Length: 446
Image 1 (cartoon, rainbow, N blue to C red):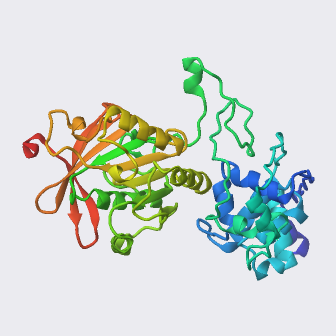
Image 2: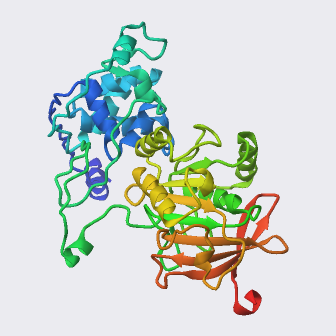
Image 3: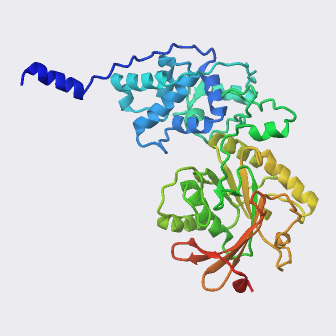
C-alpha cells in the first residue's frame, strides 16, 4: 500500500480538529486601592469563600493548584483582569508558595483565570471611608509586629486571619430585579410589594431546604427557627451533633435527606470545654464521611456567650457574614441571654436579638430547650415559654427503654400537613450515633 493511501486513510479516521483561537480579554482597570478593593471583595456575597482562599485554605479543592486557580479567578473579577495586580495580591495570600515563582505555572494559571472571566467588577458607588480614630492612628505609628505589617494598605492579619476584629459589612442576599452588584455593601432597594404571581416567579438562590423530608419539603428550612425540646439527659445535644455532622457532610440523616452540605456554627453553653471536645472526638472517630462544609465550634467566651451582650451579638453577626454560616446551633436556650420567665414579651425580645444576627434573612437558628415536665394534649404547648407560632419547626425528644428514643414533630411549618409523624431511633452509646428505626404506630404509642 502506498504512503499516500495510508495518509489518506489516517486522515479520514483521525481528522484534525480546527485550532481554537484563544480569546484574550482586555484589562479594565479598577480605580480603588488594594485595601478598599479587598474590603469590597470580603463583603460580597461570596466573600467568605474568597477570604478562605486568601487565608490559604484549600478545603473543597482536589489540589493546591485548583485552589490557586480559584483564587486567581476571584482576583481576575475584582482586579479587572489585570495580570500584574492579580499576581501582586496572590503573593499576599496564604496560598503563596515556591511553585508560584515558576513563571510557566504562574502565567498559565493567571491566563486561564482571565480567559474564564467574562465580567469584571466596576465600582458603582464610592463608599466614604471613616477616618481612623486616635487609637488606630497611634497604632499605625508603632513598628508593626512580625507578620502583621501593612502590605499595599492591607493588614496581613486582615487578609490571612479570619479572626481579625476589623468589622466588615454584613453579607447581603441578592433580590432579583434590583440593581445589586457583587460589590454591594448595603441592602438592595426592594420593591415595597409585588403582585402575587410576580412574587412566586421571582428566581431565588438556594431554594432547597437545609434538611428535607421524603417529599422534598423543608424539615429545617433555610433562614428558619427550630426548637428541640427534651428533658435533661435525654440526648438532645448528642442528637444535634450527629445531625450536624451529616448536614456538614451533605449526607442524608434518615429518614431525612440533606440536599447539599450546610455550614454550621455550634455554640455550647453547658459544661466544660474539654468534656465537650471529648464528646465531639468520640463521634468523629466513628463518622465515616468527609465534611464538605464548615462545622465550627464557638470558643469565644466559652459557656458564657449571650445574645443579650451587644459585643457578643456584634461579633457573631460579623462571623456569620464573613464565614457564611447557614445554621447556628445554640445550647441551651435559657443560657443564651433570654430574660425573664419566657413571657410573650421575653420571647419577642429574644427573637429580635436573633433577627439582628440574620435570622429569617441570612441564617437559621436551632435552639435546644427544656419542655414542661408534663405532657399536654397539644404537644406544641410542651415547649417552655410563650413561643407560640414563632418557630418554624419544633421537635420533642424523649428517651425510651433499650437505648431507643422517640422524636415527635408537632410543628413543621413548611410540611404539607404542618407536622410530621412520631419517629423512633436507636442509639449506639459506643459510637454516639443515632439510627432510624421507623415511624411509631398507634399501638406502640399507646
